Length: 124
Image (spheres, rainbow, N blue to C red):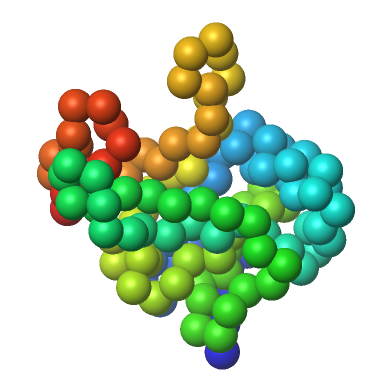
């Protein structure tokens, strides 16, 4: 069974993920452009092995959450986080920055103790 936390909920099971208004708007626009129903579909945020520091973030759109996912609804965006990844990213903020260089989504993670030089991977 998946658990859901709405914008007004402070925390869910001791873990939480925030999403800035800018990131939510950008992700919702992308979801809609892919023809996905934003009332059910969402952005999966996960941690995987990789990179020179050991761990890296992954993101993809999904039609619906999987069994056991933490589901956060932030600024209208549904964010799906699996049980293993939430331990690495609880307390994080998903943001979006535009610009000529480095435009895209990024995670501000308070659990990171070191990052690689390029900023693509991290260690907790």
